[in-house]
Length: 59
Image (cartoon, rainbow, N blue to C red; front, side, top):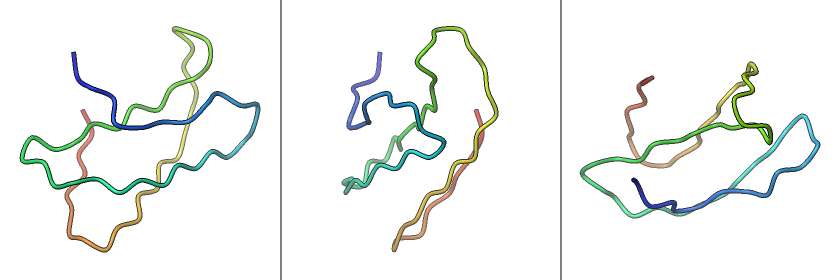
């Protein structure tokens, strides 16, 4: 199990944002978009803004 380093409360909103400052980690980080209802799937758009050079990949 991975340790959570941040997140937001579940709210009834079309757009959710979360600002974080993360230390570099050689293992990287995993972003997990979720819904309030377990097992529910829904389309989403994920935007990541950073000053550093990063690589994003789908799992």
